[in-house]
Image (cartoon, rainbow over all chains, first blue to last red; front, top):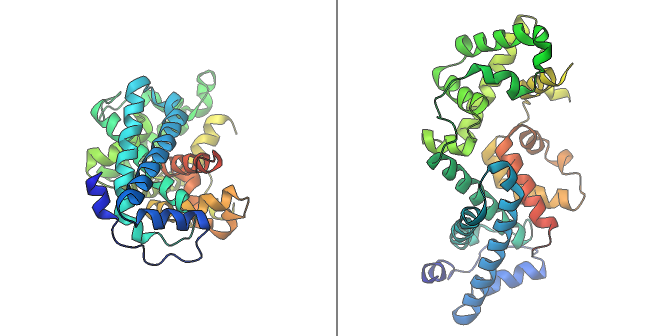
Length: 223
Length: 74
């Protein structure tokens, strides 16, 4: 907590048109002594509450339970508090202070979940089982005759149209269900870079399927 | 179109307005507050809306932030 205290000694700079509650938060966090300590404790408690709510919300899909899930939430809250106090001068009053602060803890929950699945992978990151593809998209096995050629064409397009890196990311995310935030750690990359890689891969794959008559051209921009 | 075709079609759809993860995350608190207030956030920030529809992790963060705001934890 001492470290945190040092990081919020500077006054927030550019906040404008603050609502009274946000102004109160900023004033207390920029204060000194007991006022600041009390504000930090209150903010930490709030972040723990939000983190716990968020891991509970995501929990059923994560297969993480009990103390492990709570530990993850507490780590996320602690790291979020450090991030918030370190960046408090960047708060510009475009939302309530608490909403701005919640964003940090929600993002930290994602990071912690990504780290968890990196440490305890449920599927080897480089596994490659194309038999999972129909189930991944919910194709009905009883109607295999209708989609077999489509998925064979998709597999060919993955092999021939994507760069090695795009193919690696496609296999990890689509076939192996590796969380994107886990892949970020594995590849030493960023969420944005991996997303962009998949974005470009999706465009290439659609174009290949469209060229062979399996799918229409992309019309998302008009939807 | 059956469910599998539709899911694949959705997955391969890309929106040129998509702003990407960095911009979406930077604006997430503003966007989520607009949505929580019932404001037309999607019309005001179509590129962020496009991204949140397509990016699973950012969409999950958005849903979490929205739940936190609506939960009245402040």
